[in-house]
Length: 494
Image 1 (tube, rainbow, N blue to C red):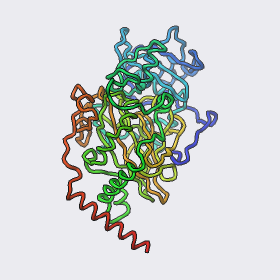
Image 2 (tube, one colour):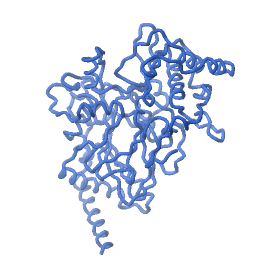
Image 3 (tube, helix red, strand yellow):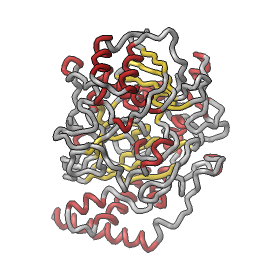
Image 4 (tube, rainbow, N blue to C red):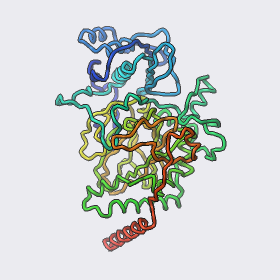
């Protein structure tokens, strides 16, 4: 597992040989095979990716019917390419007249593969076989670790949703509204329902929204290809100073009674009732924040959660490689996170690292993490095969934004500098919350609706009922604790 602060890319010549198709997925994840059509783009045209000899050997060795026939289909040149929407990547279901409703369109290190299938199991097997063929991922099968023990991971009771919701989810990245509008105008393609499908105006913005454009077309194109953006200016100096002061009060309220460094590290990663805090409510409705989100999701979206991410100097806590979409019970992958830096952030103080282009691979399986200090129990392995790792570099007051299918993670903070930021989580309201998470939390139970009822005319995403997260007595206790902490620092300096 490469260190996050110093990612490296293996050339193709150094990659180990891929595992045989029969080891790509556990048998329980495959199911039966239905008829499908496959199209592979390689240098602009269809090409064979599996020689006949290897297909015969796989059949002779007892390869599962799904994986073996998907390999054969992928290697055969099709007379006619399947018609797939050019406005999305991943796996999704549509209303195909020929019954092949399950669509797959992936881009692995610049190589596009796609296909239509009559059942979900075959689509998943095709995804797995193409990742193996295109980039050799994963290096080891998922159903066993080096010692031969099962590596199947149970869902995290704190961050995850129940397993029974998984078949109801769609994992596809839909292009931002302005990119779809250009496709409609230049390529004659149908834009379809959007990431918050309300509309009109440039970039899918409804008339009279009152929010100025934040992203250039070059930035929109970069987000489409990379799955994230860095260095987006949000806060003016005076706004940053106020936000940092409020943040320090919240942080001190969480940590000033901690008796050990470990307890302080854990407390710094949490924030009680985040959307009720004045700081979070103010930032979630900041004009520049809303403009950035609207340029990607369209005009109909809500802020459903926020997270205090503060790594104090010496905090060993890691965030293993993961995709947010795997944890959230959404009917479709229509969420994004805006990470607003309150400190200068780079690789040295454990900035988030993103895997470029990983959002165009669909949902990626995970395994148990080997990290000892971590917030998540799962991780996506071998990410160096999936794309270039790009560490965040942000100045205080700037933001990054990434979609919920982008693979990302962060290392422990071994520096003497704090790394503080607030993650604001938004979702387009054309997606549904499928049910509660394992801990009982409902994503749509209490949200910030920046445009009131116009943010969600359906009423699925409920408005937050404020309960006074920062009342006078609490604020006074925070101020007193902050003053005491400041006095201690001054005394130590003297």
